[in-house]
Image (cartoon, rainbow, N blue to C red; front, side):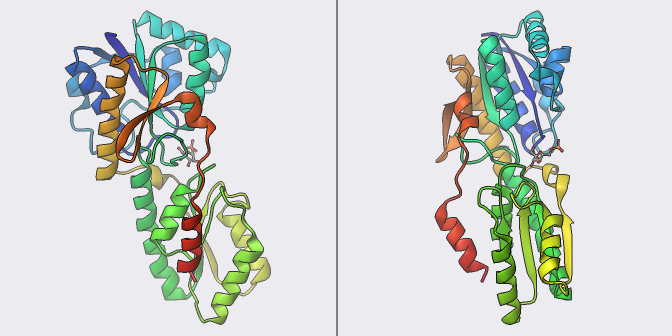
Length: 323
Ligand code: F6P
């Protein structure tokens, strides 16, 4: 294999640039040509493809976002879109692909490669950490640190006013950011999509805390919680506790930006290096993940099929430590 393409797709995540750098430099070191595909599958369809050199990835390891840009492509969901994408790859002589993205990227890959079996290796790039086959995803650590920094600040003002705060963090289908930032910030409750939210229990706990003169309540809710987002939780709280002084803070896209943490830079570098070596070794249609500090390959289909389970000990610990 002499010519490979690399792209980032779906929601960007801090550390994607470090991954691109590792892919480009490992490929060129091994005498391969590398082509950057801009804006994910959409750029593939439109032929937004350019040859990359080692200098194109200088001075990017510390930057958030992605120099290759990203997109969520509706056109790629159509047969015509995928046919155009394949034609562009053929026209550019691309023989293998490195895909950096999350759930949507690997779902797209599965459908595409069923029709067009081009060798491809994926890298888990998403702040949500909602993929099987890896302990961590590129960007998760940075996003949680960003959330923790913000929630700590919110706690200062909540404490000053004896206020209740409902903080909404990202995670459309996954509660990892909520769970981890909530534990790290000592949240009074954490609401995540993986566990059914019983709002009556949440309110009962707050009432007990108020009786014990615990006046500050910080609830962290994942945007995809089954009960709803922070505004829905606030509404429910006020129905039962009309006197409560409740504020909502939605952290939103600040969680996706910023300089990647050292952990994300190292993870992205290791995964990028391993991805090119996997392609060279003839390992295809797999995602490279890190499990127990080892590089592990998992077929695309399994990566998106399995949903993560929140360990019971973490649930129990969160309850005890927040009382
Ligand atoms: O990339 C994952 C994610 O940040 C989710 O947590 C969030 O629901 C979604 O992307 C937001 O996507 P967009 O930026 O397209 O609104």
